[in-house]
Image 1: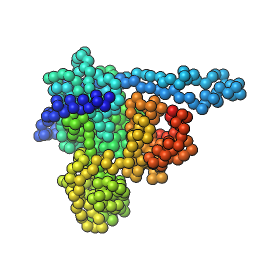
Image 2 (image 1 turned 30 degrees about the vertical axis):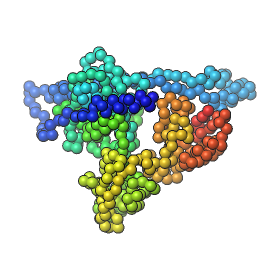
Image 3 (image 1 turned 45 degrees about the vertical axis):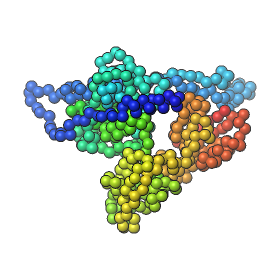
Image 4 (image 1 turned 180 degrees about the horizontal axis):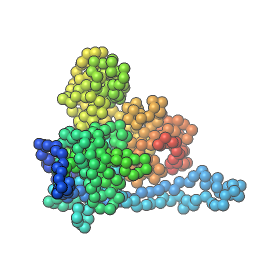
Amino acid sequence: MKKHLMLLSLASVLFAANISFNEADSKIERVNPAAGNNIILSYHDSIKEAKKSVVNISTSKTITRANIPSPLDDFFNDPYFKQFFDFDAPQRRGFKDDKEVISSLGSGVIISKDGYIVTNNHVVDDADNISVNLPQSDTEYKAKLIGKDPKTDLAVIKIEANNLSAISFSNSDDLMEGDVVFALGNPFGVGFSVTSGIISALNKDNIGLNQYENFIQTDASINPGNSGGALVDTRGALVGINSAILSRGGGNNGIGFAIPSNMVKDVAKKLIEKGKIERGFLGVTIVALAGDTKKAYKNGEGALITDVQKGSSADEAGLKRGDLVIKVNDKIIKTPNDLKNYIGTLEPNQKINLSYERDGAIKEVSFILKSDKETKDTKEDIIEGLSLRTLDANLKNRLGLSNDTNGVFIENVKDKSKAQEAGFKKGDIIIGVGQNEIKNLEELDEALKKVNKKDFVKIWVYRGGFVTLIVLK
């Protein structure tokens, strides 16, 4: 599998190192619609070309549902209790695993004439097969995954086709609230459709969808199947990739989110050229200035450092708790999200210049950014199939957890691994093994070494506000 992925990554470098994006005209004028007795206000021509770039994506993957014996089996099969219940415990079929093929639909946007398509990571994540249908065509193309970036929920796939209609990119920095936009995609698998709305808000973060968030909020309807489709302006130029809706019941409530085109362009280019995203890692926990804390600083805006991870780039640069970051290179930092997103665009081993306020004085420091892998306390060999990380202060802050929450965070679950079959999920927090509480990787490793490997190991996991038990054989 790894060899296969390496070949795909190599192929992406060989065939697409010189990719260029179609750019929409930067000279634009905003106008009010005309009115008259014989005038019909229509945006048909606005989306006529853009709709040629929006494709349907269908995926399938085989999942394994673990059939692990439950303590309730003994309870229901006990002769005493069977007199109260008119059924037997579920048959486990000899504890064999049940396999099931899951299919899903989504949308994508053609970004090059030779078949590169951008979509959401969640549309193609862990898919065994990816198929693409072009607009107004019955031909189905098999697509290969070029690269994915879960932290922005973006992915790039490729089909073997030429002379395709590639979308034109708008500069998302020029967007304004109130601009008319259209969401193009394949909602509910009914085929291509377009919905209209306006840009409700810009630069939305702390939504809890991705690690790097700078969303465009729109009231244009985004429904299941629209994910990965295009959000375009009245010229038909791409302003964002439809990503998610905010909804209590799954329906559209007029609060949709799209990933800005500038972020899409940056991530897609790196995925095509390298097959992956490598980011610099500062290693700080940051918050915004608010209330009385603003009075303690001469600068009323910035990213206030509340914690510095030991051994990180920030630690080695001498940054401390209480420093207010106000500028990185030429980027003015007004909010914590500004700092997080800008650092996220930089690659490891890149030199940066950082300006900050400390004790009323403006200071500057230059240093080399490390990779997040160089500073994170991460291991992949404690439980086969799991990428594990100690729940440190930075991670607690990002996940919105209290400081007294301890455990080991599951960053990733390898597809078709024993860990996945057992029921572990990405985002779970391991808090205990048997009767032992777990606070970090070392305690987890030590606890697992003490158990009898022939027995079922009880692992307690915190998931979505509840504690659940996973039994590992």
